[in-house]
Image 1 (tube, one colour):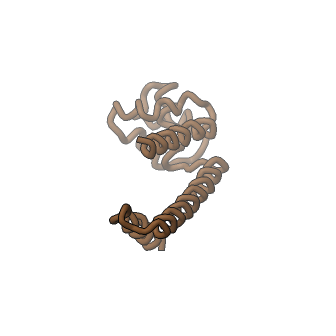
Image 2 (tube, rainbow, N blue to C red; image 1 turned 45 degrees about the horizontal axis):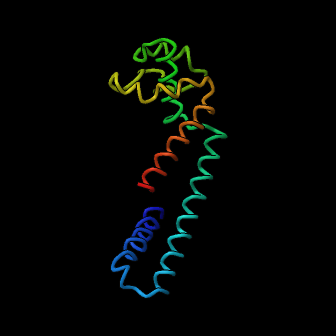
Image 3 (spheres, helix red, strand yellow; image 1 turned 45 degrees about the vertical axis):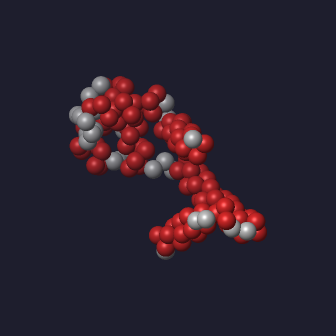
Length: 140
């Protein structure tokens, strides 16, 4: 259902851009109204997801990255699962068994999250970076 809704949304938005300057003023106003409603719907969904993630941080993406960064900051060896177990107080079997599954330079991407001892504080910065990147994409 979500895929169908996304496809229809893309058709409406992109189809509306087709020969946009040759459309009537009323048609363009209607198109902008539809795009505005879709944008507000999207932003409300994003806000609900972000608030839910603050209440219960997701384990497999964010929490794993925070653990890897924290382990790198404290123990310097993220490939040893024993070091990750010293940092973690939550059961993450896949993360705790194999260690950091990425090449060494990738740790630089998640290391800034480790500067916060609380994953929720780090999550605030994580989302802030995402929203800043999104804003830059829209503006540029």
